[in-house]
Structure formats: structure tokens, C-alpha cells
Amino acid sequence: MIEWLEHIDQELLLLINGWHSPLFDFICWNLSKAISLVPFYVITLYFLIKDYSLKKSLMLLGFMIVTLSITDIVSTQVFKEGVKRYRPSHHMTIGPKIHLYEECPGEFYRGGQYGFFSSHAANLAGFICFIYPWFIEKRRYWNYMLLGIGILVCYSRMYLGVHYPSDILAGILFGALVGWGMRVISRKLVSV
Image (cartoon, rainbow, N blue to C red; front, side, top):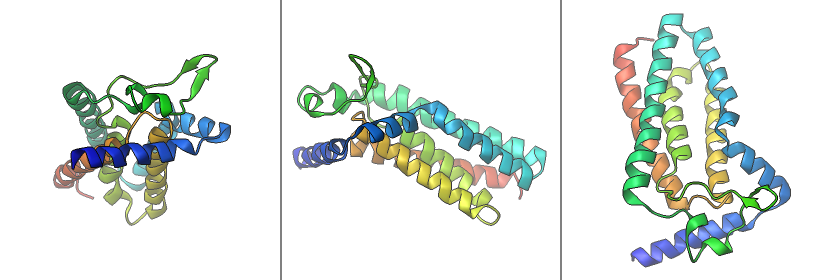
């Protein structure tokens, strides 16, 4: 059963990674950069300050930072280093079959050695699940925008060949759990 699931995981990754083109390489590479998400975080903070008092906005910002810290630290320090599952780009059998992004002539992006589970997916899912209720009435469109960006970033990680679909799914589930937990705590401490 495990072998069958691993086979499906690899085949799905190869399918996603196989739809490559120079344009998609460029888009997915840039979507995967952490700096690309900064404008979305800044706009989110701007909306919080505009919709709520400065005190509430800063408290929510603190909760967002804690959420992202938990998802990032646990995904990298606990899971990646604990599970030690090779990324597809570092896997002996599947690695040679993957199209990798060429950062500069002769240098290909492979990510770190281990990939379970995706920090990008965990961080974004945590952020989105935390922030969702604060914008449900006033900024519903912004929730949809963040969800769309989250989906594209998760897709880009598979497209670039550095995460299996199961890495993404596990990251989303973990991040959503942390984001939901922080949301429950924040709702008790920060009244709307």
C-alpha cells in the first residue's frame, strides 16, 4: 500500500513538473521566492489597520508572526530534519527525470536536501486560516486573493520539482491546524 501511494505521488509530481515552459519556469520560480509574498503580507496589514484599531491590528500582527514562526520552525527543524525524506530533486531515481529551474548557466535549483513537509504550504495555510475570519465581512475578495496566491505557490513548489504532492498536502494540513488554533486563541484575546 505504501509503495502504491509513493508511486502515485511520484507520477503526479512528474505530470505537474512535465508541463514546463520558459514562461512557467519564470513564473513559478518567482512565486516560490519568499520576497514575492511580502506585498501580500503588507497589504493584509494595511487592511487590518484600516478596518480595526491600531491596537487590535498590532495584536493580530503579533499572532500572525507567531503563526508563521510555528509553521516555519516546526516544518524545517522538526519534520524535515526528523523525517529526512529526500526532495524529488535529490532523489536518486526520480531526480534525473525532473525538469529543474536553471538559476544561472549550469546551476539548477534543487532546494534543501529534505522536503517533508513543505514550509511554503504550511506557512501560507497557517496565514490564510488565521486571517480568514478577520476579513470575512469587509474584505471577502482579499480572502479569495490570498487563497489563489496560496494555491499558485503550492503548485509552483511541485512544478519546480522540489516537493511531492504529499509534501504540499501535509504542509497545508499542518499549517491550517496551526492557523486555526491561533485564530481560536486570538478570538478570545482580541475582540472584534
